[in-house]
Image (cartoon, rainbow, N blue to C red; front, top):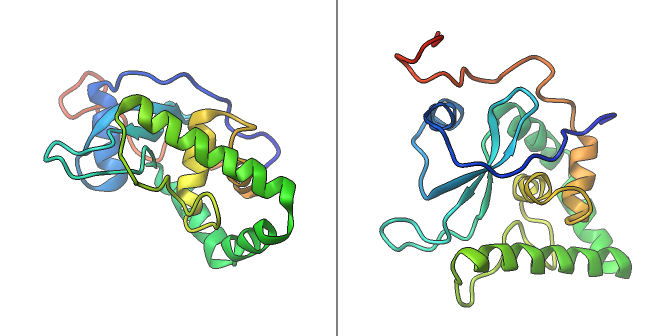
Length: 179
């Protein structure tokens, strides 16, 4: 990608954000705490979730990618074997492995700052393998460049998913300007 999406500050979800989430994923959000990253189109593309759902069920995926266009492009990378290639590199590249372990520790620290989940892994296969590029990209978008090296690499491989415009309408039904 020539120009990755710029970092954004976390924000409290608005009614329009919740509507966009429902449109993006086809279900209401669970454990939604914040919009962790906002797509250049204006919609959420990464949300921050609570470490436990309302019923107490652990939900260790702190950063959840919501944009269907980004998710589809990441799915293509996964199908093309990018995760396997990255996991193999972790076995032989000590510097990359150390940076990926630091990304794992960052992920856990961010989750633990909300609520500690004792003996729960981070996400995405960290720190030893790559299990889910969606989580790594979500972490990179939420934390900013330089925190998760493999998330950053995956972002660099993606097309600019926002270039076609918003993936969904963010206006809640009945709101002024809703379609």
